[in-house]
Length: 117
Image 1 (cartoon, one colour):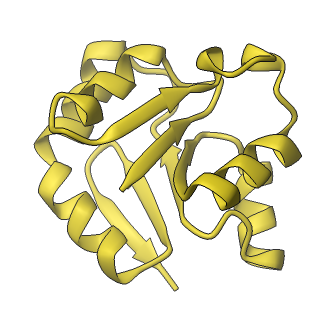
Image 2 (cartoon, helix red, strand yellow):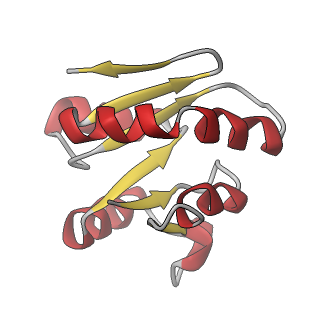
Image 3 (cartoon, rainbow, N blue to C red):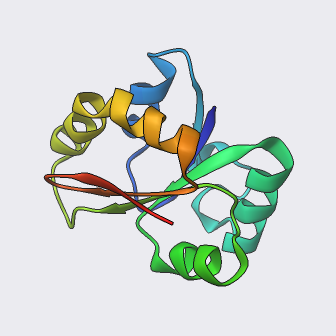
């Protein structure tokens, strides 16, 4: 699995994935950095097989309407400290991977990780 972290989330989140041997990049790693249009992010995800991680509801709407990107992690935690966000992913990492193996949309909240069909 490969992960592409959107602009509203901290670049430090990619280390949660890379420290476990997964490829992860942030929009800051892309040529247009955080100014990369959503359509470009979706195209890159489709072309390179990335799972998009975002707080942006536009990606959720695109997923629901067009199933693009193919796999999406929607983060719904509000504004929290980076270390707390990382802890949510670290503490639920195995569950997150398990869900992604079976579902295309995973929603991450402060106290739960859930799936939607």
